[in-house]
Amino acid sequence: MKKQKKIWISLLLSIILIVVLSGCSGLPKTAKINITISPNPVPYNSVSENWIFDVILSESNGVGVTLISLRIDSYDQAEELVNTQILYEEDIIDWFESNYIPAFSTLSDWIWYTGAEIKYDILTVVGVDDNGNPIEATGRIDYLPK
Image (cartoon, rainbow, N blue to C red; front, side, top):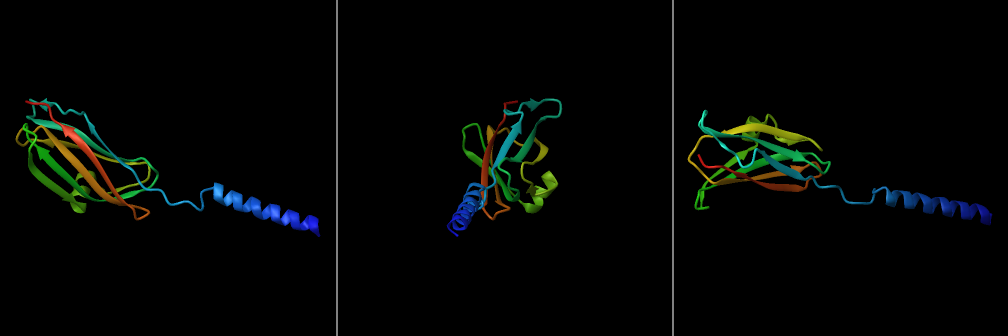
């Protein structure tokens, strides 16, 4: 009887150890968004008379993200804020054809800027991951002069 009891206790402890080590008792992951601008700094294209670049949003922590907004703050040569543009879900879908980034995936689109000469933009992306966590990421676009 004592031998059977030791086996059951050993089996129970083994199961508990496996559950703990497998991460079943841990917190869910939070998504991580990375913003890449290519090229950066962005050269002026004298033929098309604009700045052309790719915006790449990627998720790198294994949790999908629904994008809610993308804010663009534009700064002039004196580094003063001159314009703020906020894109919401419909606008994000227009730009990237989706507002959802699956785990370990990307959204990308090429953008052309034809406005007044600015020094840089700050992009701020806000979303909610598949586990309900709020997500925010920031990137910078530097523009070379004409």
